[in-house]
Length: 109
Image (cartoon, rainbow, N blue to C red; front, top):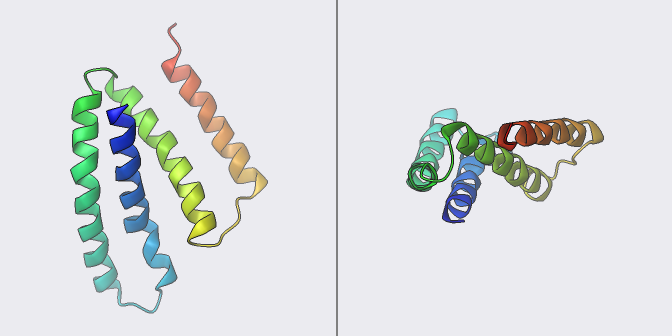
């Protein structure tokens, strides 16, 4: 559970670093890059321990899959709440297909 929590926190920072600046299109790009890198540093402070701790329980491919699912959930919330962009049906359908990939990766064959 520590891995999931750390990955979630990491993804919140990552999403802010990657997409938060979209509301500030008048800011100079070099400032946006520096601020994003500062936020990304905090993200790494959670991501690296999450992967280190999680690799005792999960394979690297499973860790990446967990991270991607968390990223999609965090991004959906961020997109609606912060960017005020709706989730269209085709976005949700695509995300559902990605969820199918999770099943394939975690299924014991």
